[in-house]
View 1 (cartoon, rainbow, N blue to C red):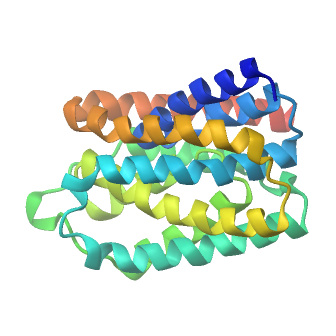
View 2 (cartoon, rainbow, N blue to C red; view 1 turned 90 degrees about the horizontal axis):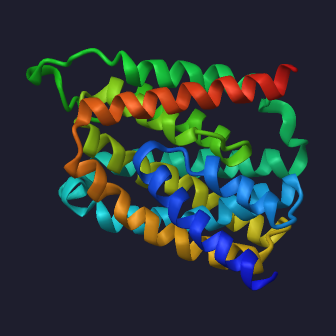
Length: 248
């Protein structure tokens, strides 16, 4: 790993941490950077998932105002994220990672549209707690996140916005925690059984922590409608790109 590679990964990590903690699209930046420094697709996937844990650490610290007093609501979602992340990592270690390539664009596209057209929720119907549908949705997305990972954050964010009626800032904070524990669970499995390239993971993780720490501050200070539109459009663009790669 050359000094130029290390610098590239740190810078990519900052960009990915910002992108991930704001829009759930961290891998759009970090995964290509790992490929650019010479890692193969599977090694880049497991190294990326491992490094993304540090984005969660940074974004959780940055989201403390939104997370205050939410431990009871988060607990079942965290459990679902851990179980789903473990299942996804197991699938990835046992089967080829191209299984999701053809369905991922559709999942990402639907989630992005849900963010764009999210209906207004009357205050008396907002904050309904953590129902079984939300828990099941988090579990399913966590499996996808541990196995394939592309834009899982967009899916969790869309689910939080539609199912809870929370603000973008709080939904984003929940997304960062839930997806973070799923990534952390998968990362443990990859660290023990996978092909993690630690020389690449370390500089990427450093940048991810810094970017993840700044992301919630940007969300808190931005216009929610504009930011939600940008996130949805970015997700749709990624869905189109992945569809082109998968079906061409």
